[in-house]
Image: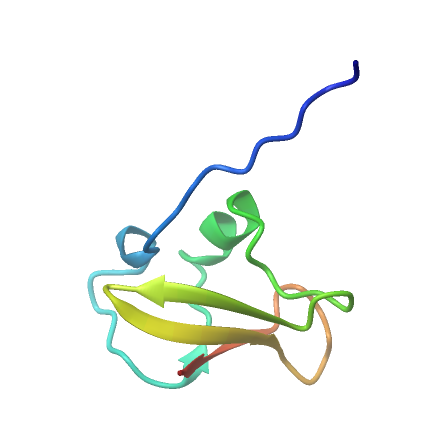
Length: 77
């Protein structure tokens, strides 16, 4: 039957940003990258944009100019 793959439900990633977080267009903080990876929300070449919510505010996450998975920017929707 194989190994089932489950994605954990996530409504808001606000618990993963640093206490100094301020809303706005910006690079993804280092604290947020592992959570985006865990919840399969990192943009990639196959999926260049993803949508996330931080403290109730919707964002679009996109790959930066380098195209690397650690070069991700957030833009307010």
